[in-house]
Image (tube, rainbow, N blue to C red):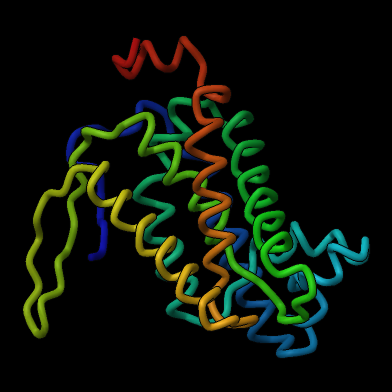
Length: 219
């Protein structure tokens, strides 16, 4: 399933922060391509380092890095679908703080579950998961225009946010359970996704403003 847009609403304000974050991710990815493994290893987040109190700046830098074209394109598609509406209801400054804290929550979750891991972690997935958690709480009944891939066939359909985002979260949860059962220490950082999502769902209303909720017809 590939989400391509909210069918029920459009942002009332320009999603400036969302666009800037996407731009920052794009620039960082180009720097990765130019700098190679040395650049990636220097700026990616290693849970064991964070637990030991080293290289804390990588909590921030890793949030703007990606492991390949599929990784960055997939993340940015989800971010562009769910981010503008959340920015709209929070305002740009609150939204940026929320996004960065979502990435921090994702890092903490991953470090807790794998404190001794020396596998580099990178990607905006945890922060984007926080945005998706906020979307689930704020706009659960919005219909998301989604491309369903059925083998060689593709079909555009409309799926309620509570179903689409809820399904995504369950896949992350069961993937993490499977990873723990196999005592994996590498691969996809599913716990970071879960940590970011839970943070977003719990804290969304704290960052939203009454004025903007009224503008959106939520009050």
